[in-house]
Length: 171
Picture 1 (cartoon, helix red, strand yellow):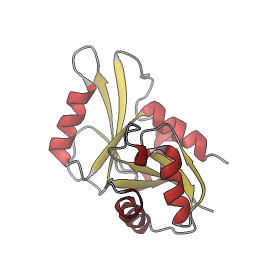
Picture 2 (cartoon, one colour):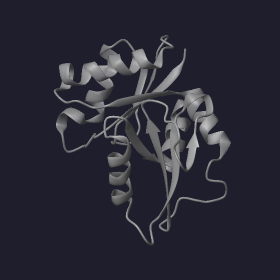
Picture 3 (cartoon, helix red, strand yellow):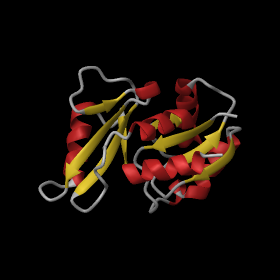
């Protein structure tokens, strides 16, 4: 059965309705199987026979306010999409460190004319950025992305988190 990850925007563990077990419970109620969360920032791995990602996103997004009382823009990506992204090695030999913060920004819809390391491998629609932490701050960079593309269109994860998600999705 196909494996997916739901990447939720704006999830904070301080909100009791956003705790991992509650997020898992909602996806289980929606009929998805093998539901698991990865770290407490809104990454939920699941299996579904559905193959239409837009329909999966819509179904999950509509469930948050109905079941848990909050809204969260949700981007769904398949295991194959994440694997293709990781296999492409968009950062080359650059490693995530205190100096180099490797950030993947996932887009709800494909973006045209974007500058930078935009990956559209298998429709993953992600911008892979290296933030120089010695001269700038990651929150400032992410706020700039929000202004440029809209909070309702993007969500970001560190490269390490993307790799961790993919590990949880492996058979």
